[in-house]
Length: 116
Image (tube, rainbow, N blue to C red; front, top):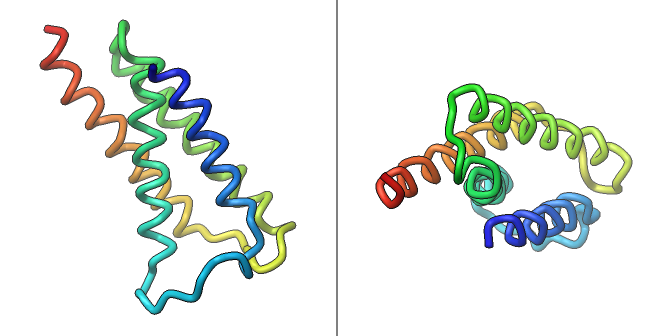
């Protein structure tokens, strides 16, 4: 279940982050894009955690997964420089990291109780 969710969510994240800026509605909520990044990567962290940490939980594996998700987020930011209306933002990378950290941590908290 988690693997399929991870694959689907990867395409959702890529699809949304590679859309030109003009496709997004103008919403007058301050920093709305940061909230969206946090939610997208929080869900992504949870799903990737479920895919890769379900049977074997270790600190090293947790850190490796978090770093890989962060590299994914940095790569997306880099590619966004080629998309009209999108740009590279360091804050987005930080928010992506925090969302992924929360998602992975939530997976561990929820599933450590269910499988111990």
